[in-house]
Amino acid sequence: MKVNTFKPFGDAAGASPDGHHACGMVRNMKYDYLVVGAGLYGATFARTAADAGKKVLVIDRRNHIAGNVYTEKVKGINVHKYGAHIFHTNNRKVWDFVNRFADFNRFTNTPVANYKGEIYSLPFNMFTFNKMWGVVTPEEASAVINKQKEEAGITEPKNLEEQAISLVGSDIYEKLIKGYTEKQWGRKCTDLPAFIIKRLPVRLNYDNNYFNARYQGIPTGGYTKMVSNMLDGIEVRTGVDFLKEKDSYEGLAETVVYTGALDEYFGYSLGNLQYRSVRFDEEVLDTDNFQGNAAVNYTDAETPWTRIIEHKWFEFGKDEEGRDIPGTVISREYSSEWHPGDEPYYPVNDEKNNALADNYKALAQKEENVIFGGRLGEYRYYDMDAVIDAALKCAENVINSR
Ligand code: UDP
Image (cartoon, rainbow, N blue to C red; front, side, top):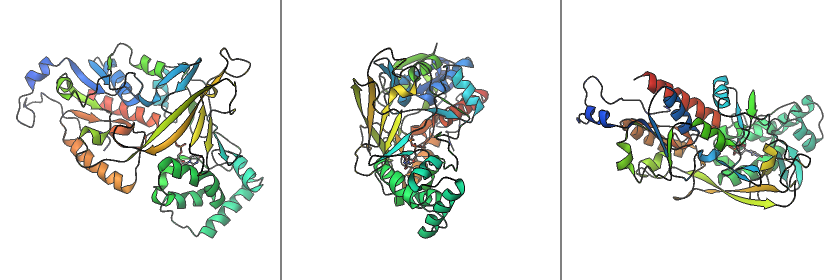
């Protein structure tokens, strides 16, 4: 279940299940929806509700909107402050929706892997296989992968390591997957779920496009501008921590749309869900071209960062010829286990955590008039387009059910 079932106040009986009459409250409520979190889920829900004529208040505990897609201009470059976000989708409805609020450039994500100074193409494709084994044809590449898979004796992959070897063989697993994954997740590949590696395409052609998506790009002017356009005309208050000011805020609206962390909402009463956090070490450099690509992944175990992002390459006209401001901005990403007070980025969707999340979701179901949504609210490793799709569907459902 993605969201809490919607249970409107002021039904035929006019009373809430705890016996309190709700009608008086409804009349005094200033807003139909209080959206907690101004990220993509919150902004999409808020826009859809506002377009349907609903009164919406959006709050966020950070001092800015846009959640983790927040971008900020540094030296004329839109820097992705909470990690690189490349918009990609096969969902026409979602693509049309975001294009209402931004023009997208035709950026295609083609990250490269740096393994101890050896450079490989990503995702795994014929360029990668050629560099790794000297093979030239798809047939030769499949033969090597199948041989390595057979040698490993894997029939039904049970974890990320087995899944990776059965997709691309043991050489690529050892050089391009193991070190990177164990740094990113802080766990052995044998202890991680197989689905994580299935996010990456494996191609027997010379296509370096990281995503199998019909539509892809970066919003011109940055994600913050896009989210600001989504929230146009909607009341937004930043620097407001809902969980600390619940008493004064929840009475303002009939329905709360909560996009913060699921376990935090319940005061971690059943225990902490695990997340991975990321630290970004941002540097402004005098050089105009640091690494010649937006993303370089460091796939060995020893390099302490997982990847380096050079933000200018997400945009156009920022190369040597077209640049208006000299210099470049890079961010090194360091992955760590989340501790209370850190920013949660990635839910660790292993069996143990998913089981705990299910228990929290059962509590969420019982919360009257609260909808839980988004990567943190649903504890799901969601991509941006899936978040928007879920928010659109949820908003349409609850608005139509009234
Ligand atoms: N991955 C890898 N090597 C790479 C890039 C990705 O092994 O060079 C694995 C890693 O386990 C990662 C997963 O693929 O968690 C998904 O990568 P993706 O790029 O989708 O992660 P995100 O962009 O969400 O951090």
